[in-house]
Length: 121
Image: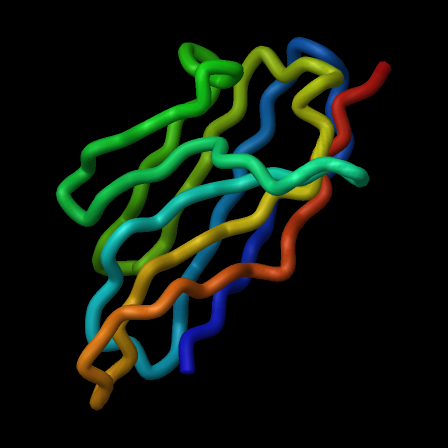
C-alpha cells in the first residue's frame, strides 16, 4: 500500500505565497509521475501541475508563471510553490502519485486527502 501525506495549505492574502508538499510512503517499488490537482465545490477536479520522474513538467494555463512544481526523488516528495496567489486559486489541492508497490507488476494512481488553500483578504 502507498500513503500520501500533504502539508502546507492555509489562508493567504492575494499576492502571497504558499508551498505545498506531499510525501509518499509505504511499500513502494518505484514512483513515476507526481502531480497536483485542485477542486472547488460544484466543479470537477482539475490539473494544476505534473512532473515526471525525469523532471519534465506540465502546468495549467491559469498557473503558468506563478506556480512551480518540483520533486525530491530520494524523499519521494513532490512540492508546489505557489506565488502571486489569486482568490480564484482557492480550492482543495490534491496530490496525485503514480507508483508501483513492491511485489506488483503494475503502477497505480494514488491520491492524497487534500489540503485547503484559501486566498482572501
